[in-house]
Image (cartoon, rainbow, N blue to C red; front, side, top):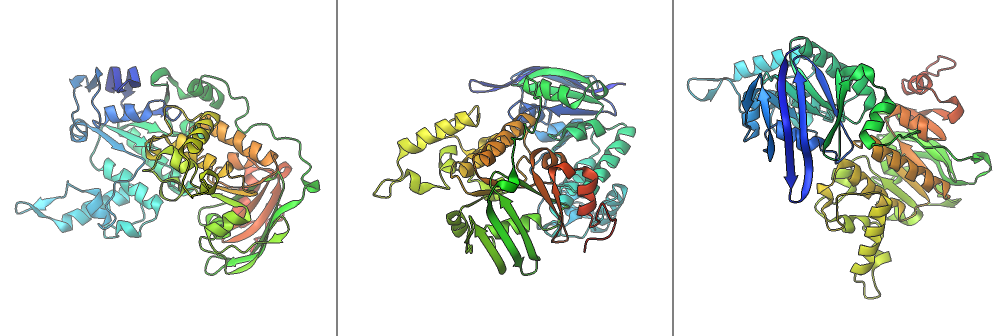
Length: 507
């Protein structure tokens, strides 16, 4: 199999920090190379070097045997290297067609856009990829998953030799992921090569031919995927063995524990109605279900965003009136959002300001002024406890890796010691090493006498972490499974609205 891209001795430093050091790689024609590593391992820097976003301090890149230098992303695209970053770049106020062929629109009579040809080419591209949107649809009207698909299609239509996909499934449904993989396999057969970056190891085994692992900016290993298993990859990534990713559950007699949170017949107009459940002290309760089942909507409304329209909530046996996030916090609830960038964190603010933002009164003096020494000492201790590396308390949170951003979010809420912590997609976009640390923190928090509600689309996460899980379907709770009854088949059956034992519909 011929090589499409080769790189030798690539290095890049930012000041005294060496982001990547002496990395060499080869991407073969018609293969998928999975690029793996913990957050901060150097994946993003290497991707930016290959995509022309950054220039290497040292090293060479060859395309089809010819040495080349990229001074910009346009240089890389002209050479046949296209990248789809995790952050979408589509223009929401333009149509699908205008986004697919942005800066590449067909023209006639000089520089006039040929709109008929643009729509025809877009329709053909959409049909080829089996995407169910129209060229004339506004991007603003598409779901986040559909936008991700259009971003990938935009790159494909530039006919690259090598496509770099950075967490391409982060916003996709299971059906959309299957379609993406089908398209990757078809394009592979046509000779296109892929660099596939993901934190989901099961995707690595499903779609990749070889695995390349980075750690601390260095190349650790490149091996055929068939020679590896999940534990071997994790060991290469973190430099140590993680015997049990989800930790060992402590011995619990939940039936003897008091109920610390109860929701009775809660409803939100236009979303869900008459939902009831309870959480016991030290319990980790999972909430599972397909996208659109109402899980996040229920969690947000419990936190007052927006507030429930009817029903009753009790915390430690006392009624709690929750009409806003402030009242939810006062009542003893914490909420760790699935959208850390837009809702959970103040990205332009330093780590220190974020970590103390949920409990400012703790760090103010009698005059109402925030005491800098207290916040600094607290932040430094928390960063050490949560293993937030390569950063100072004054570093903007937006400059951190996804794993360190998530750890900052956990610190914000767990240090406040809410009676019950609601955690929505706790490890989305987080590497396996950080996942292990986050799971340990969740167990530790629950074991210290709190309750945790975990909402997750990651089935192994639900089964590995939770004591019990509720399953939602069409805004209803249709299943309630204890850990001893967990299986993917049963959870998925309930999620589809079918009782796995009786085979009858749940609604």
